[in-house]
Image (cartoon, rainbow, N blue to C red; front, side, top):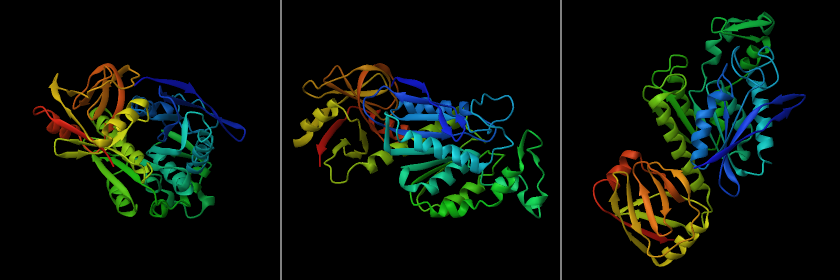
Length: 380
């Protein structure tokens, strides 16, 4: 789906936080994902995720921590690395969270936090402090080994900490407060206290933060969905990135569905004899489809193109077609009267109806790629 970008800065005291919002071309207020970047990186490390999120109907915001980037990166926020710590970055994220609740395109009841490495630590701090203000946390290779990585315990007292501390062999220099703020952090206690839902992703080839730290965290977090990213290092690229995005979108879709009013009558869908979970769009097309399905609606589908099943609904529905690149699990309206369900990808002018959230691409191919099927829609 198409989206636009908008530069939005936030003010933390006298200093400015630079960021970019990625906003899908959808009317109404949208769920928002706030991305917190890794130590030494900038907002640019989150752009890949923001683009995918926006293409799938989620607003996203990437920003630069004040002083949180290594030399040579494109950090546009105020501050220096000698002033930065996990607590100053937590203050930045809190500033962004408070501002985002007032942005006109944001559903303030559906704000999610996504953080990588040190950004994951910052997400944990802010998430544990503001549990009632966020809809969930997503942690990628969180730097839970930070105290050991930076030898915090080698200092007998805080006065022993030098004014200038080189991290990872001098790759980045920070001030004394970076160490003192880490010193007082108990991330396990924060994780154990968080009562919301958490998605935790870690690569099995991470040589910076061993995966064992996330394995232990998954046992501590009360409500945690943990996935190992095969071939993933510290940051995800190539197929590990694709796998991570797939888990993120599936998890987010589940949270949106869970958050819908429990007593509201829901549009349900079955493919053959298999019920599937769907996050439906909030638009006129879905409302009309729901009315048709009130007494039960069967749609005879036919395979087409090796990537989709298509079937006539029997009458025309309201449509707002836009050029759309689909992916496995997407449900769209074509030509106002055809339902299309994808187990592959295509690009055409469609009206989005929803997305199947509980099936992997392989499971979708098994359901739809072996012959014509019947789709049944009901309301209950």
